[in-house]
Length: 169
Image (cartoon, rainbow, N blue to C red; front, top):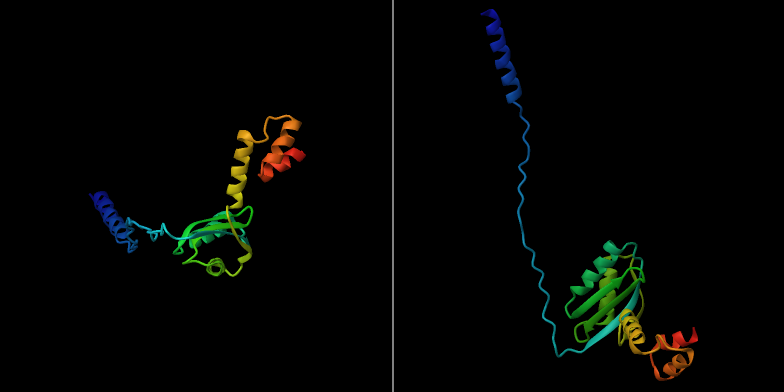
């Protein structure tokens, strides 16, 4: 009987000691939210211009280039914005009435002081698009799979730069 009392006393003391912990743990709640990004309607009658410019000071594709790209894409009047980290080149299509090259430059430099805009120019087609179109034309019907004489004749008629380069090779 004495052993039973001792065991019961030890059990009560251990339950009391371990159940009275005062460790409050924060309650974690997960709340689902929907973020809807709305872009202003683009004016179909607007005059859109294309600008290309170098951005110096970028150190990474996901952080720097994507941040700049998103910031420019959110501007009112910007139809499209692409930043090519490898070439340090930004290509933006914008409404001339709402956006100017100066505002584009201000937007890029406002992301961080380390970014510098160089060689801004208005273009008819972005350099990446132009190369793709030229390469596609050359593969289809211009100078590919022809003899040297045919390539020379083709180059005279073809106004694409890729054809002129291929005939020299």
